[in-house]
Image (cartoon, rainbow, N blue to C red):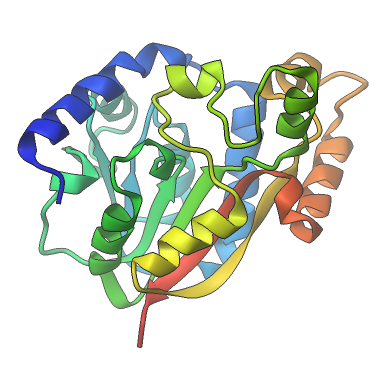
Length: 250
């Protein structure tokens, strides 16, 4: 387990990254959250849900449409207070890093979306989340995909030295690593969890800022986005995000 000094420094590090998360949902991020819920709906369990990390609460809003018993943990007071102002009384909000979060409650659904790339010890954190599951619960781990075509293009352009290099945006957001599907599976399996499913969300030929500039116009239509979503289901290694659905071993 990471020591208390490291956890204190980790909170400070995440606070420093807040400015990289612009307030107000960017079109591409908003679409990704919707597609994520579509991808996960078949695996959701009835009962208590835990969301790890809330940022401005946009994913929290979608989870509240699906779950009546929602707990949200978030290490930065600014994000937590913002989310509390949006959803006061609708969810249990706890200021904590997942590494030092303690509860006797167990969850049927745990959403761990775009957080694993930040943490100090990925396997330790995934193992802890596994301990917070009920015997029938499911953990949803989502990370940005190192092999997305947009990153492959960035390598060819010389913007990135290799697919798993941290971009300037990665560094600003406090990322420690970028995952491929095999390395994500390695860490989840290393935490001694059972694999239920793995896949990708949304074929990604463009960078986020390019999608944001073109969505809603004639070039990136809703039909085009739906096509990217459907294609991503067939080609996870070419998606914006990759995921694993896992459970306790029986």
